[in-house]
Length: 291
Image (cartoon, rainbow, N blue to C red):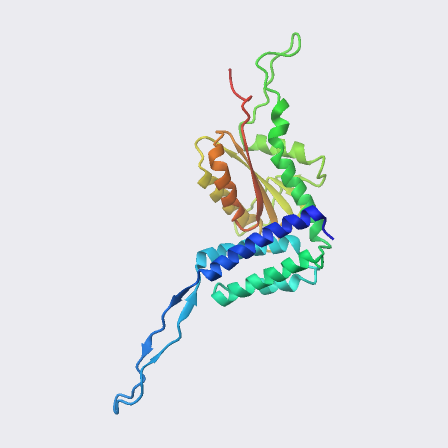
């Protein structure tokens, strides 16, 4: 059984997805049917008939909503769960109004199971709690940088001033490896994943026990948020292939240019990528500047 905090978190996410699905369905549009002339040309018999009106929804919004729903359902429902059939049913739905309506109904059924504590997560709950722990740890990185070594003068007599530079993606990977290994002892780094044709991808950090990849990026002043999103989308498509031992990606971006006004939109964009369960963007701290 999930703990109260986890259940509340799941319910909040689920209610948001239900609201979005209801909105997509309620904003469906109608394409009027056309009149068809069924009269026989020789005798002029019969009356023109009208084909049925066709309802449709915004396909782009529906596709994004479905991806988010399936990502959520696969996180909280393990393959061994009796509720797995609901995930399969949802996955088989299309993007026509009746399918959106049925999808919302499936989500509401899962919501009721959560609220009545009928839904348990024999495998997924343990992984979710650990993934949440991992994300929370990464979000706390700025607090840990308060004592980061960046000396303008030596703090010991006769010593040299030291500055721990983070100047590229490899330095970010080193920082993450240092942070994660004590808590997640199965961390792998620079692991080669399954080949994709002639491509031989290599991930930054992997946590096999959580089936999760931590992908590190270094965003320079010359890089755009769009380029970060495109790079992660390309990486995800290579890492999360069939038979991969990984199914989730957490993105960690070191923003060397401190563009905090861009972070919220960047994180939301990354979360829309299939397989990306969360994203963390950390700005270069203020102490890291040359005098």
